[in-house]
Length: 461
Image (cartoon, rainbow, N blue to C red; front, side, top):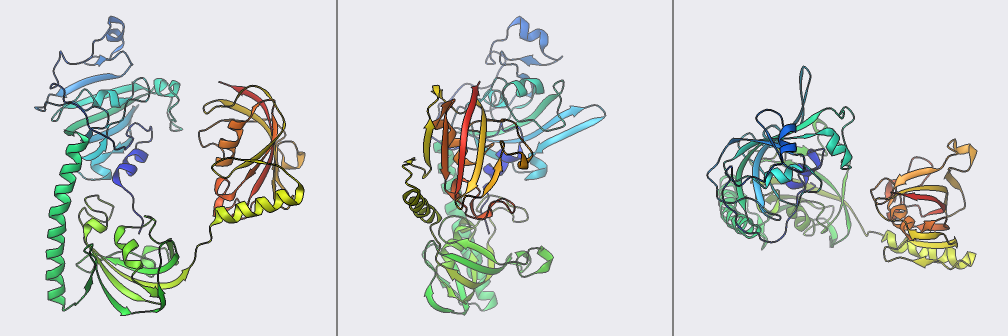
């Protein structure tokens, strides 16, 4: 089972991107919220605020609904807990973007680390005015978010406002947060082990135990060597709670994914109990893992798994394979290609190769710039799979995109930054910076090294 931290879920759920999850150092205390503590407002901003609201110079409007009793306002890297409802009031109703009480828990607040405001009117600025116990409403025109470069949802229009209804529960420094988490985790480890010991006694189970606290039993030891770090393992599994109720399985049609689960072991792509447990087994082994919550999802809730859940997994190792280092394979292919075709290409630290046939003028392209290109893409056998200069691909016009924002493959985002306006060159892109193991339709095979002849027509702000 894959890990999905709640902070990561939170930052992705809030579609406008104002609740970025981060962790860092410590912060200093501030005084409690009161009318004098709020940032000063100009007469111009007051005139624009809605009735009952005040407006900050950044354009963020706010109204304190209730003053709390806390004594500290959050600073960058502090951790806060809050209930938050993000929505856009619309005629005849309301469009909710994010509601922590519905998406996570009605009784437990969400937590994340404060990062500096990223644009004028960022609600983070408002959160940094609050103390524990405060409740407030913040509003910002959609038009302001659009001007700041934030990605909007398709139905949003410039005349709308986005509203954040917030209840601040706690404010802690990074050090305080880490200390609290460590104390809670230590207590939970003891609680989980006691529950497991009672469970084993009740059911007559005699499991083996690892130093980490993972318990396991073997129904079939399997054959060959134990799974090693980095190997690709194919697993059949059923995950259950301690009452026997299953919550996931790739062998039960009720869960709608009857295919082998493949994972590279030891790389943090599954919960810790799996990463450790799988390396105890051999090909063909059948086992049961009894995973305490600290080796599973811990205090995080992952629907349908409650916080601090002990998990039981019946697993079967159906196959074990050594993983091919695709980056090394790609590099060998490129080196052979260059030798065969007498090409002298430059290489970047990421593994991208390039040549420049015509040097342009002016500064090189930078992230955030709008770049307009001509291009032809080929596979290493010389087959063209796309071009904006060949009529058979039905788009003979310059190709514009914003550099460094993930609008194109990684090889383009990096490679075009090496070029100037008017430059012509060739990018030799390893598969990890192209379309990887998925490929692209029928045109680009999985793990394909790509070759792009490119020309930078224009670079704009």
